[in-house]
Image 1 (tube, rainbow, N blue to C red):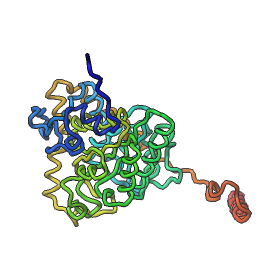
Image 2: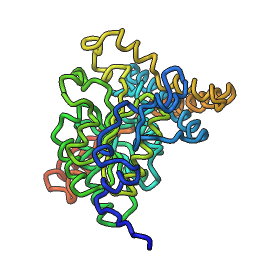
Image 3: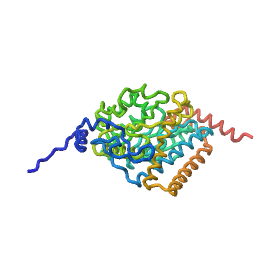
Image 4: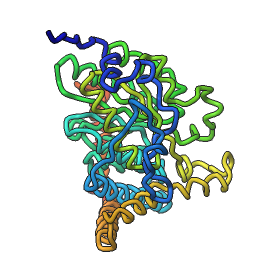
Length: 391
């Protein structure tokens, strides 16, 4: 007579049984950083990928990788275009993600249409990859008050400067979706500096206690503005922080787009099927300054930057695809032309002068305008009318 094996209620125990490992092995990140393609574009053999039982990742399909590479090239071109727009005075500030584009492309592509993405101020490439029009993404960086895009249209939270607040918003959306019985996964992005914030603790603890389908994605670029990681955390890795909250963590090479797609893809699938949070740490590098207002030479030297330029995610992915016969000269030219079209449209849009209505100062302050604001708006309207009729 066959014996029925009961399915454990605990999602961590259930997931560990799926992979044939102990819950402790499931929760701890793999001993090696997950990597599938080395900086030269060589596909690594399985024994060099940092995997171990329960941490194996299948190679994404060729068409998926080629499509991701196109998003990667567009992201790099937009980053460089935005840096030029700042120098031209068309943008007030821009936090470049030059060097981190692979993390952002993978974060957006691993989600389904109804899933939510909560980005940081640096994650413009992720927001674009999720489907938001580039001009709408960038308008916030030239000071437009409305933030540029409707978060509900693409299920993308608004980028904002306060550090780590988006993690709390992400957890709230995931909690609401679970209460409604919706099939929704939320991916919440943050940097290594955010892991030192109280909001980080509160978000992870709440998500773990209430077993919410959230993937916390930490882009560890080594610096919180000018503060190195060594002065923020003594943990073996940021992924190890997950264990203290009762969730699984994983480390991945943040400049390896192939490994990122595989690792984040499985994290999203597990969050969806097990209704539990996971933490993924990607080790990457911000090759340019924190923003155009930052002097990165004051806290890091050129040799360090050059070391990471050799690990560039764009050149790595290009070499891999070409070596696998998935990318030829014609495809490369097509992708470059498409990226240039995006940059040109962005440039034209940002060069157009914004038509400012001073009376917007009095709108959206209160649901019902106060008598004082109404009086002030009338005074301004009279002054504007006099200017229009003045000879």
